[in-house]
Image (cartoon, rainbow, N blue to C red; front, side, top):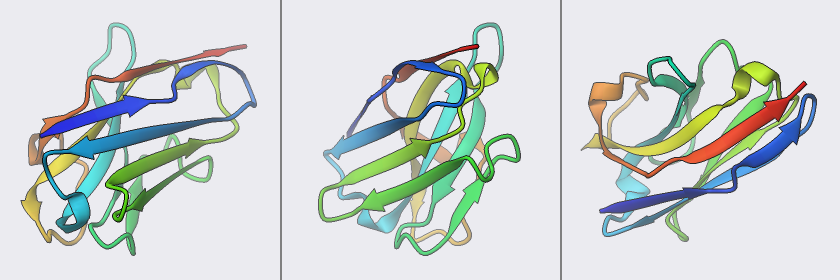
Length: 126
């Protein structure tokens, strides 16, 4: 199973970026998918997750109202739309696949995700 995250880059505070995650080797339609991030010197943290069918989402308080996670199971893709970016959003962003099929509700615990992408770097300047 491979997850490839892309779409990161440099943005100004208040700007937007859209991250994408392409999955191969696993049909993700029966797995919850999540986005996590790791800032320099900090631990990896939960950002957002979406249920296998796309009908339920969960967000970290720090990104609620600014970020939106979505998925296209036909394309085996997951997305993270990031708006109103802040310098504190600067981090490497990772997509990940839940280890359990058909889990409900979605969870944000790192230990519940077994496949991880390589990460895409997001830098937000003030």
